[in-house]
Image (cartoon, rainbow, N blue to C red; front, side, top):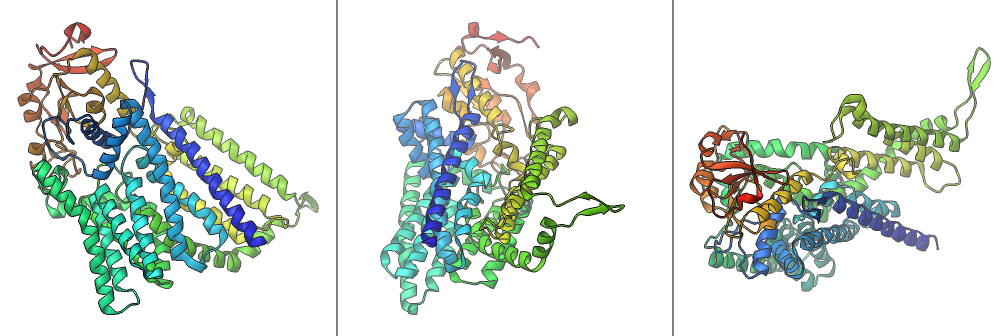
Length: 609
């Protein structure tokens, strides 16, 4: 009866957790939207996702899987996600299509939790307990980058889902020794590759896992070959399509990001990029490593090898332009799976051997005497709990008021605010601990300390993201998305459909304006992508942003609109002044090509500066 009650309670808690997450995600989507200059509410994804949305819009509206109609350049690396976006853009208008992709992101995160929980059960086995199964979904959902990238339209959540599916099927193949899970594992690995090609790395740990199964040597080899051949069907078909459609064996983004930079410089850039990720996840990595070594199983080795491969790959490609860990986020559920049980054991031993006597003495302390007079007697635990909760609320108010005290901006939490936040969390946790320590509760002391320790670990992993998680600030780059949408509205109002635009941000503005676009940074421009990185700039080692030729893109091609004349410290303002005028529409400043017949000059105000 108690077991059934625990199972029922566990399911209720997990269900409640999912619904709370859905509410939070809905608020996130609302916070990432905005009112534009035309008075309408717009939704916008991360700008790279909006590049895929432009490809998807053109595809679903009969113009081909292209960025500019008539130009076949593969400027995306998320083929399957782009196809999903194509279906959405076929069914909905521009704004609602973007909103639908954000809602799809909620579903992918929930699917990740579902599959990660199944994988955790397969890997942990009988070494776990109901508390860990309840906490596990919460821990996954608390990792902000997974939600950020998924809700902002990137393929991160979808590729994580397929990776988990493939790993789950591989383990089920070992358990059942049937060919169907092997086929599904290879198929899901193929789908992860189509979602993002670097996900194909998971095939190596899975093949090694298959080769170590307890069957005959010949059978193991045959199974590995079957897996590999089934996996290769979709990637080979995609490569054939790419060559036939785009005329290249590799996407344009490969040449843009991985060619021209010295290997040593790329590796140095990759190490610098990955260091904050590893340090923010250090407790997770430590206990995941200990679990893999001290409680070794082949399943754990498969997960840990996958995680390590992803880290090495991130270093090899030179990092990323955005330090929100979009490429390594898919391995975070794997690290959490390996971390959780080992950390629980550590806290349990620590509490039982060291802290239990201290805590008992703390809660049952004797009166304090001063000059023979008792000044503090034993205070009821509920009273102590309420006092600590009130103190924590006061620190939350200090977080909100500290702008006036320190002059901190709204871009993030300052040092004082971080200290107040951590202090508030500590008081809340101790309030809970004291309130739950009454003998009428069935929760054991080490369970409570373990939950507190987990909260601290996840707080540390998410410290830089907390302002966004609690909606103290808007989601990352939302103001830039608003500017891009406002500019698109201004361009649509002041130019005809035959006009052209130049862009550094190649997603939101082209998507909403539907104009021919010139990509200054080369994601969809083969000439720029094949250039060497521009040396001695502020973006020399920034993948995807270190190749440009402003003279070619602006002075030679002369788009009707350009956002500016400076990138990475290179400035062609002097040369461009004879070609462009600074104009304004509804507060939106634009650089427009002089004497262009494609611009309705009566609609804009020309700046004389």
